[in-house]
Length: 599
Image (tube, rainbow, N blue to C red; front, side):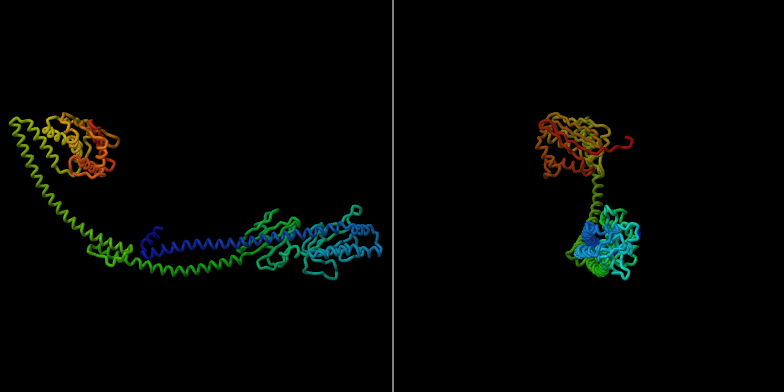
């Protein structure tokens, strides 16, 4: 599998596209053709099944009609009282006079013969008297010795249905050697005299079972009687072996319902019909080959496969040509990319069209142009960085100068015992040192709080009232990191927008606590507070829904704090506002809790 994957990955795009397109075309056609030819085979089997079912129904109807005809004829003869009396007299040895014989022949025998001739389906009806000395009256009345010449007369039980025998009651000739007959043999019994003779009502086999004598290629039938004997109409080689195989593999012993089976014998498909005939104490078996129909479908399939192979070859050539044409622009773009990879950024892809490949070429040209511009910008930026480093060094020198001057002023104030001025200068120095110090990352909350302390010390110099700072924080809060100048703007807002207008002593309360995996720093002022509308408007300014200008009281400071916290820690962090008009304003800063090892 790995080798196949590697080989596939090494193929060119036009070959891959050709293979994929052919697969998407051929696979559905293959499955459709398989389903189509399978359906055609199933349809052929169903059609043969329906034909077999119709034939079985027709055969059974005809057999019932013929059986009824034989039974009615049998009952008619058995109910003829004059015939019974005549046979009784013969049984008792009372010969009939010539006049009685003539009358019996002209009246009774002639009447019985007319009844036989009126039924074209019957072969013959014969009465065999229990005597060999009577005067035979053909074609109805015969001696017993005539019956003994027939095949069934040798059976242990001569009564019942007899099948597939030749009429041989005369010594001189056989009436029709090819004519096979069947009959219902019934005893003629009288209560007084016992057995008087035997009645044979015969019908030709081809009349009862015409399907046994049909000469159709691939189709034959047989009739199996209750003794297991099988009767065939036409001469067929190995047909008994076929029937034996069919009976072993399909028909269950003693099965009483008709069935139709599909079976293969030696690779040849057959439809087999099994029709039990209770009235004849046997069953009919129909065998019909569907090899010609299936073979025709197979030939169609082979022809279809040849046609599809030819179409496939033409399709592969056509698709490969079309794909190569479509990918010509792609190969041109690929060549340009390889040139860029070698370091030539001045490559320009020519002849870009309006299709997707042309759009790709246009975008690559724009990308290369943008790369060249970025490289120029990067060079300029590096130049600016160098200049900034120089300026930062200059600012650092200026900062040291300012710090030294402030230290001199502080010493002069202390010499003159102006300690308030000295403290103010100290706070200003720390404030400037914190503000002007270059910090690449975040600062600790403790550093930010120290800055706020110095800031308030200087602010209190301006006012006639005092602003007190109240702190409630644990050490773990002090050690947390926060963007520089994140808390001071909030304190500044509290003074200028909440406390300054009140002009009285007040406090700013800073509280820090842990909330799950977060830290909350609350900055609360006891100022004038805000209404719900003002809080809502401030939220919109902070979130950027409302444009915040650079003037005082417009929320730009809080928005900057919000943006810097989210940039540093993520969207779920930032500030929240709670305020009550005339009472207080509380700003809550949420930052992630960073635990130090060993803390």
